[in-house]
Length: 291
Image (cartoon, rainbow, N blue to C red; front, side):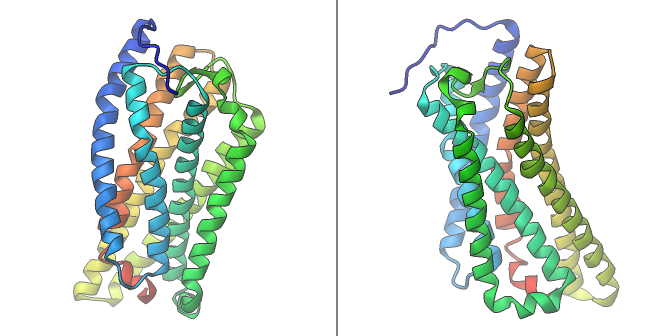
């Protein structure tokens, strides 16, 4: 049962932060829900599934779960919810969806790099590519579930100031913080940047050998991969800086504001994924194995 504490007092900083969240989260929910439903409709019309479609469907699932729990966040910023085990579940789901998105986006980037850098290997594995993609996605979901189940104590009601806010003065346990920062962010970031820049370089270099429509499509692919790489960096870097600040900064008000804004930026990835992967890449998915 949800209990509310709408009469809770806020200082000036908290009031300004809540105003920002009230204005910022509603458009993300509306746009994200619309785009993800549209993407789901597109997937329902796919007749021939490829490994790329499998990665994207899992990414859609992670994004859609994040969108579905967003109304609780919106409700929270209008009328604070008293911390409960529902809040623990919502926070675990929020973190799980974010890191599933990070890992799946990284897997897509690695998959595209292999297709471009080693086209003969990609063609040789074509018959097994869908099973490989399914296996990778299952492993990702299992890893996230294990990490979340091992660290759910970090989000118990006693740790929460409000339903979606941990008490800033309570630091994350170092092993959990290391897992989030290293396994959940830095390693995927390095893979993403390496695979994306290498793929872009190969595509740009290959332009001298092609003309016409093929040349245009390769230029468009390079532009899309560049946009996806910068979207990944912009969306997920601030929230991981915020997690570090929560543990090592003494300025409580600054950390609270920074972390909440960073979490909103990370949430916008649910909308950007739909645009970047489900629509812009839709035209070139069928050409992955030709590069």
